[in-house]
Image (tube, rainbow, N blue to C red; front, side):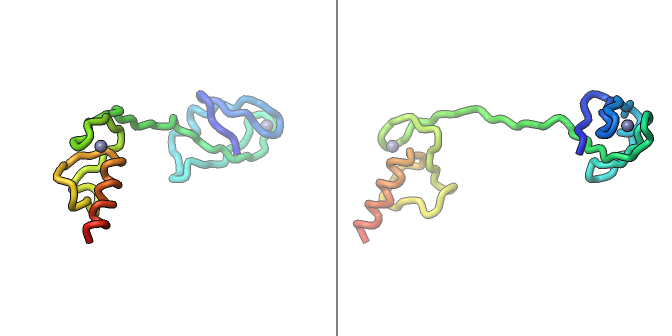
Length: 108
Ligand SMILES: [Zn+2]
Ligand SMILES: [Zn+2]
């Protein structure tokens, strides 16, 4: 398996730098194709790698409505089931969330 960098790929047999500018025009679905080395004329497999894409999200801190602490992973009513019945708040930190669950459990 060979990775394509820029528009040339090195032949695994003779290390000749093959020009790939035309080879990448008509790519099969799996981004792989066979290419014959321009120098030694042996076939090798070329694997095309596209730039990885990253997705990002802001880190958001919210204040727990119960204890007031900042939390990065709040438990939100409507998003997490079951939401503790003993909690009147809609957004709480994990700590209060589990505490709420415990209270539910004790109230039963
Ligand atoms: Zn070659
Ligand atoms: Zn809290």
